[in-house]
Structure formats: C-alpha cells, structure tokens
Amino acid sequence: MHWKSIVTDPMPRSKAMMHTFLEEVYRLAATNDIEGTTDYIFDQIDKLLCNGDFAVCDGILKNLDVERIPTTIMRSFLTITATAKTNLPSRGVLYQNIEHKMTVLKGEEKTRRIIGSLA
Image (cartoon, rainbow, N blue to C red):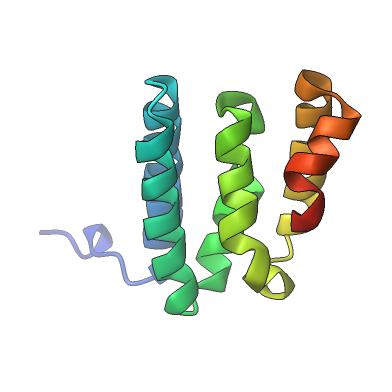
C-alpha cells in the first residue's frame, strides 16, 4: 500500500459524500418517487444538522442543481433547512434559484403560496 492512497484530510470524504448524496437525490427524483426522495432528503439532512455538520449541508445546498429535481423536492430542501438557515450561507442563493425556477413553472402567486414562508 502506498502512503499516498491513505486519505487524512476529511474534506475529500465530505465532498464525496455530498456528491453521493446529490446523485442519489437525482436518481430517486428521476424515478418520480417523490415520497422516497423526500424521506431520503429529510433523513440525511436531519442527521447532518443534528450532528452540526453545517459545512457539509451547506455544500449540498450550494451544489444542488434545481434543474434536475421537481418542485416538490425543491420545497423539501427548503423545509428541512429552514430552522438552520443562519448556519447555511448557501441557502439564500438556493432559495432564489428555487423561487425563480418555480415561478417559471408555476407562476408567481402559486410560488409565493408554496415557498413564501420558507425564505
């Protein structure tokens, strides 16, 4: 075994975990399993938040591609992270991206009703 193959920096593991998490969200969303996707998001994000892993959670929000998920799943991300928003700097930008995409898909009034309280 080469010493270079041993990872001592925790950030690569965090980045790999973020990528794996997001790919699973996209995979589940592509199957139209809204309930399963939502359960997965709530379970995993809740664990991160309860453990104080705000940097990992923020990285997920920063890298979330709203073009790859339905509006119901967009709302799930905003809902589960609402109480921790002061610890998640990327959440504000994500909210704006979701608001824009949802407005295009559903109109301004409906978007306000769906996510207005989650800002």
